[in-house]
Structure formats: C-alpha cells, structure tokens
Length: 502
Image 1 (cartoon, one colour):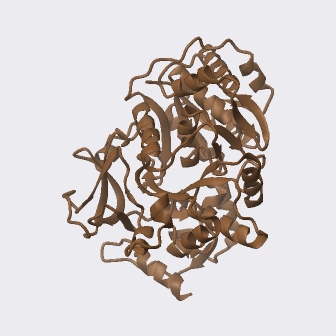
Image 2 (tube, rainbow, N blue to C red; image 1 turned 60 degrees about the vertical axis):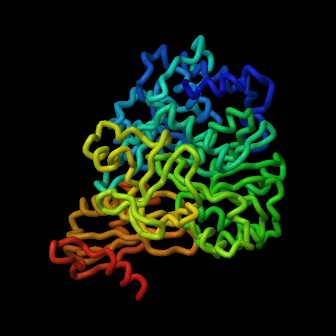
Image 3 (cartoon, rainbow, N blue to C red; image 1 turned 180 degrees about the horizontal axis):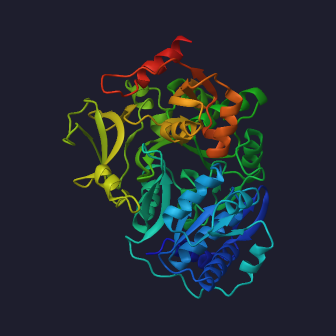
C-alpha cells in the first residue's frame, strides 16, 4: 500500500479538519492538504517524473514540505530528504548519487544548490510554486507494493560519503503502527510540532499524525526556539514533538528561568543521542510525565526500542535508575539481540554489538552492495552500536563502535571533516573527535599536523567552502605528530584523553 493513502483517507473522512499551520495560522485543511499534494503529483507527472523516480527535498521546515512530500509519494515516486543545514555541494552530491530528477527547495537554499547542481530545482517560496498549484491533479494515488522504495535517506558513513538508506512503504507503515503500540497514542485532537528538521526523525513522525487526522504545526521561525515552542503549546494544546536530548535540556533550562510550566505539551519523544540521567530527571521534575525515549537508526527508522512514559517517570522501581539510563525495550515490530564479533547471540548482561531484525529494517543501501553486505548479516541489521540487554529486555547503549559525533542531535562523522581539512595545503595530517559540550552534547575539534603555522581563520574559511557550517571544528590543536598504533592507525582514545587533561 502507498503510504500516501493515509492522507487521502483522512481527507475523505474529514475534509474540513484543520491540518497545516504556520505558527498559529491555519494554512490548509485536510481537504486542501490532499488536493495540493495531488496537484504536486500531477505537476511532477507533467515534468516526466515516473513512479520509482527520485525527487529531492532540500527545504527548511515549511507547510509546503509536507505537501511536496505527499505529492511525490502519491505519484509513486521516491522522496530524497536532505538536511537543510548541509552545504550546497553536499546536497548536490546526494542528488547525483540518488539519480534524482528534480529537487524542491526553499529560499536561501535554492541558489546555493542551483550554483553547484545540474538537477532541476523549484523554489516553493517563489512564484514557481504557484504554477504547481494550478497544475492538473493526479486522478488517484498510485499503487505501491510493500517493498517499493518510499524514502531514500542519506546517512553519513565511515567512508566519509553518505550512504542512501532504502526505506520502503512497508518500513514506514511498520514504524507508524509500532509507534501506536510502543510510544504514544494519537488522536485527531493532537498536534505535531516540528521544531527539528523535517528531513530527519521529527519529519517521519508526520505519518501517524496524518493517519489520525491530527494537526501539523510548523513554527514561524522555521526552527527551534524555546519561547516560541512554549507559546505555540499554550495556544494549540495537546502538543507532540520530537526532540534531541540537547533540545530537552535547553527547554528545561529556559522554562525554569522564565517560569514556564510547559502548558499544552502532551508528549515529547526524545532520541538521536545520549540523554544523561540527571538531565531527564530534571526535565520530568519540571514538566511532569510527558517524556518517552526512542532509539533507532536510519536503517531502522525510529523503531529499535522505546522507553515508555511510565519507565521515564517511575522512581519507585528498584532498578529505575538503570532503566532510565537505558533506551528501553524492543518495539513491537522488531527483534533485538546482542552479538559477538561473529554475530552470535550473547547472554543477558554481556556487551556486544546491537543487532535488529524485522519489518522496519532496511533492505539495504542504495547501489552499495558492499556496505549492505556489511550491515545486513543473516537477516540481522548490525547497528555498529555496542550495548547490553538485561533479563527484562531493557537495552543499554555502552559505546559507539563508530566514531560518530552527535552534536545537537545531528550526526557528524569525523572522516567527512578530516577529508575536507586534508584538501588544504597547510594540513599534513588531521584527526577529528568529539569534545563534551554542556549544551550540544558534543562539538567538533580537530588535532592537526601542519606544514607551517596553524591559522585557524584560514581553516575555518576553507571548511565553510567544503562542508556544512555545523560540521566545522570549533577548535583546532596543533600537534607535532598524531598518536598511532603499530599499524599506523590514529589512536583517537589518546586524543580524547588529551582533551580531558586540557
């Protein structure tokens, strides 16, 4: 079944129900939402886009994002969501790798992409969007098989280039239905607030809210602003939102400073990085029992485990602290196991690699059979994360087998930054690691062996020309040489130790 059928059904049931809001203003009912999505589908068809073709979304959080997304799906085409914080060159590479036929953009991103990409682009904030809205509508939602591709989500890898995670209609349906079983209820009276990028986990949570005919609110600022969130929650009520742990911490600090009590916030689902026990205890103490934790990856989107509202709030169970430090229990549509180096299951309490299988797990990476073979072993997704399962089924993350840096809930892979820095002639060797940061969780720092003096302003400018601003190192440290083992591999553990000693 095509996932776009869920929008069609909600529009059929209650066409006049408010659907899309920009701040406090309703800009579309469910009838409008569906009709405009079908206009997008018809326009795409007129441009030669066919079922299975890839269409990029390189946009900031706007109502038109959801309209374009469902229009692509209605045609049977594939959405390629691209983080709006990426550099134009990075977005262009993703579009090229995906073989995208077209890309929807928004103001501030359109020119940056058009300057470096040959893919046709349409700015939804320009008059060109008006031509889409007067196009002939697609007559009906295209049929789709469960294993047909719906989302092609690019997640960075250790090679320094993103890998395209193939997300099918079946995976999205499994994720959404598991949400109802393991994470939270949704009704037509609820509101999804998108303060984190629609291109990632926050955006994928639109599905269950569309199915239930809930409201969708895009902040007028287009991003995360604590005061705006509190104001919108009070105005709309029954707010659901997805937050990175750093966002939860910032909301708690802002609320305690301003006297906000979180009126109107019904559920905050958090994930995407480590949440410190002290931070979530403080958040629950201030806002009450509104928090649920999830753990997932692009390869099993939002759908590996969940720590329930009860577990996050309970302080009476003898193991409450250990459970609060975990990421919960397996969601309904997947199995979780802990494996050794050979992928053989380990006993409860033993540390190993987290393995997942089920209908929410990807079939593989786009046109990358080598990476797929490494990630999928005997039907299990090898997550690359290390952890333990206790006898009650609670999963606790112990370490990342990859050197990924999570800053503000966004994944940053050191290799990407290292490769960008190595393009500069003054850089002979470099190693990038994450440094603990009180607000963002981690920030990026670089240890560099130079061919001369270390000029951080030049390196900053160089990075900004190569990669997204949020990936740029926040500090540079000159070294005569990098610590290495006998095989020449840089010992990042020693670099992290050096940061602790600074």
